[in-house]
Length: 390
Image 1 (cartoon, one colour):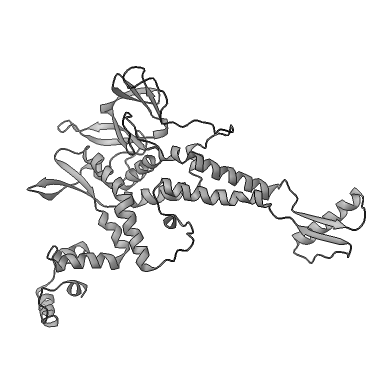
Image 2 (cartoon, rainbow, N blue to C red):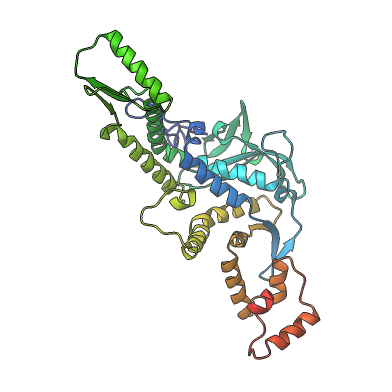
């Protein structure tokens, strides 16, 4: 994705938010495809897009301060294709693809293929690859260029995150991580070269006498044959065989890779242990895993979910809105979910039958209520957690 500003209106700058293509020492910054080969980048993108795209989405309208459920529009079932003119994709696929572009480029784009004439909202949005879309601003008017064609604002669906004043597009996390990714890929290249060809011999053999090149080659081939076969290495008393390890200054590439992984996790606001980065001094228990999941949902993921809800709601007929049911993430933690819903029942914010409906169970029968009355006759409050669990 590129951004062009005209000389009038927004200044003389061009290609803003696009980082320089070369590093100070002349090395090229990694492309988007190369960045995706970084394990931390891939893990962060996969974690965020997988969690958000699998959240159930509901459509509703506000009435007297209450959310009234409404039938889902096509935009919440089969919103469009993953490419222009392709087959319709499922909602979760469409959300996953757009979330990946949002987390890579800070922007997601789509072509409004079909418009509801009565409501003036899109009924089908085919996605465009953000890296190939150019956003132009001239005299305050925003246009989009893709595939050699120019489109007006009303033709393009544009969702963004990480916005800054003075720019019509969001900032790119992948651009922010470019230097860290470059450090990682450079270290990877060094490691591959080291283990494939070396540059430094893997071992040395010292003898107590001077030998000819032909004798050296003969001894070398004999030792290589024994080592490759896993055989016992036999040397004379005047011979000394020594493995050569990676020098400390060159072994630093391992530290560089570890630092890059942590740096990428910070850029994507993802706890290291959630993408399998070893954290020194940490001890995983059920309690802190549960707290970590809640922290990730409420603090780190919730803002992205909120922005997506507002962006998609803007494409629905007024006054309809959409909402992701983020409570679904708690289903991965039955103990916490049971505790929260049990408290809601005890505080009269939720009835046992409503809880049972959430668990896809039928309402309590008269016989069940009768049994609860016998089993919990000593309770001073209405049956709560234990009753539903029964």
